[in-house]
Length: 298
Length: 249
Image 1 (tube, each protein chain N blue to C red):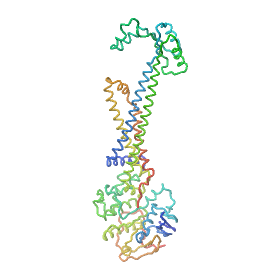
Image 2 (cartoon, one colour):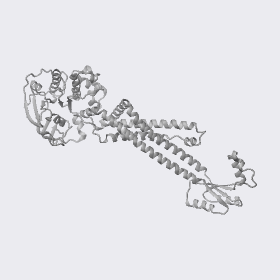
Image 3 (cartoon, rainbow over the protein chains, first blue to last red):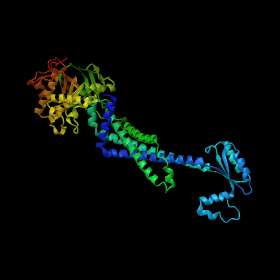
Image 4 (cartoon, helix red, strand yellow):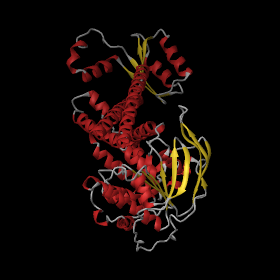
């Protein structure tokens, strides 16, 4: 028997077994699907949040708020001279007030009617490399904080970094959870395969009796685990895509939905998750039969 | 063809299943293996197709020492041995065709070849017309004939039967025995375990008798009622031996 013939035989037998014992197979497929779906949700969410963070990072500024007596033009020129600065834009108190009124029209009353400008002048510094974290850059920012003309320095990248850490932790927890569930799915599939092997022990004994090799006897069970896993992975990806489209439809109404639905997983990531399900199924099948002497004749 | 040299089998409990058993069955011989229940008949048969391994001694089947062949080679040994059991061991949910074609499928034969060899094997046992039946639709005798067809499908060198008539009435038993004799006429070595002494005396062949794991007798019997056999008309690739004529070693 050639390898192709053997594989076709394994798949045919596995498909027949799946259909015959569809209730137990359904449980195994469901556990795989839930695990892969959970992993997919975390992967998709972190992928999109990280993408948003990268986009935001490109727009991040270091904002230097000045005290009233400070010389805006001179300090702007000084800030713009640093080698890591792409541009330094002066924002006068009047400009700041106009911008506030434009962005928050409902709150415009807060900044209107003052004798003096209520908002401070500031310098918006765009960095050449927004993700740069060199000690020199940090020292430069700290030196601005220490200057008497400076009220405060707001480095947007600090909270973005904290958000990034939060997302990474959430992704780690999510993937660990998905990994745990996948382990449970492997155990379920192993139980299902063991049950199937038990139900077929008479046939296995005949196969062994007439001279079937271990590869030939175990192959259909391995194929069954693999198929269960692949189906589970496929169901998970289908469900994930459905959820993605649902969230996408709510994009306009929800900031969270808009953040989470900028991109679906790439074909490579989708294939990886489906294959992860298949791999879990195969591992379950191999583990279930590893110590089994699949019955014996006589 | 089948040689046992001082074969001893002890179970972990210390109970001895076979005790220094030696015999030699030449190619083409028909041999009865008899003894009371628990005498060691089944253990002896299982050793021939390497389902059991002796603690001491050597077993040579078809020139191969089965006690020492590696696990990976056991399937290839078994493909040269047909085995028939008292309880038929057919899969009820599979058709007669599917039940007899396990080995052709393992060997990767195409469906057309499988149908040809299945038809030939079933014709030898008179069941070619029941190719698509399921075992529960068949009588006990027919089921045993299907099991024999399964054992014969690859023209094995050796046919082993463990109480093949134990579940059948006397008429069906005669019919099944007749099949084994016909198979033997085509040159296949047959070793048939039974405790039906009437059948053995009626047929008259070489008889190995076990008692509590020891081979207590190895002799040739002249049958009181030898069956009239028709030599199968199919072209046999094997030369017919002279069953029952060989002297016991």
